[in-house]
Amino acid sequence: MFTLKNRFAELLAEKERRTGQRWTYEEITRATGIAASTLSAYANNKVRRFDAVTVEALLAFLECEPGDFFVLEETPEGQLVAVA
Image (cartoon, rainbow, N blue to C red):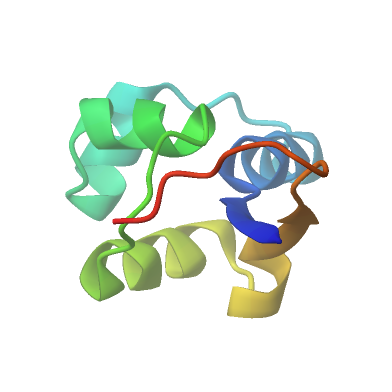
């Protein structure tokens, strides 16, 4: 079984290295319109339902493609996965 994860935190760190600018959630909120609590949920991989408008804004902000942002991770054998 697989779990869909996002790479927001990793891609944000790459953007910060690339641009030499550190981004706070408050600054990202101003740039994208996405609430800081939502950004935190993405950074901690707590999001299980992906809103298209939010994902599009994050992709534009991070300057990446969906294939860069999402990754499928194999769930260890016998581990229960919540399905909504």
